[in-house]
Length: 348
Image (cartoon, rainbow, N blue to C red; front, side, top):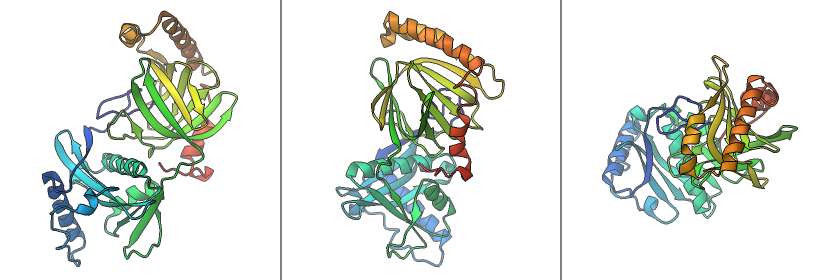
């Protein structure tokens, strides 16, 4: 699966941002919160010198963000606070994002996307079905982030240059993907878009704005679009990745994926994969020795081990020969995510 994990290389040996990200719920009166809010107000004052921010500069507690139906978060790189953001309720169905701020060194490293994903997940937990926010003309970084994440302009009477809203309701083509280890330990989870089904299986899609979660860690994002093929039968799942990702094809050997409904699939990963790098095209079987070493730790029965190794050998031969679906079958599905003329909305 296409994972990015805390600044280290993850499955498929992809590059990941050098950031050890943690997002923690805070009280707005904490030392870190007050310091970050002061910095944010100072930056707003520099960008909008004609405006008076003296009232906002007060860093006492903000009860509205500590109340029920609200939340305040501080973002850390390791032990160092690098950003903040809050959420409050406007009505029973609508939340509002407030005071999203990142220190300069944290910008351009997908930190804002991770914080936004945390706020959106929290809003869903509160039962909000839409989120609103405001930003100004002289905050192009923030505006670009929100628009790319699916926020759209609205006019709800709030006097601000950019008033935006996002619908948090489940989409009809959403598919919840839960990945576990064989022993039942939850590994990764995300929501992919169902693109369609053909003779090979069901095709799911992700864009660079699709959040991936590893347990309760902050959401991470792949650097390019990919499509995932869940076969009609067999113990594997295949990813086909767009450039600039260094791995073009990554096939995870798994237990047979289980659909528990049209909108949910469970996958048990067996730590064994077939990889086709983009630069050399030299297909390799990843981690065969590690798989056999870990069989005791994960409790793999002998029949599971034998079937996984058999499947890995078959997949290695099929990917090497580019036999479908490991040849060009994925290209029309991937084009729906990467070709703007195909009409697929590239949002989270």
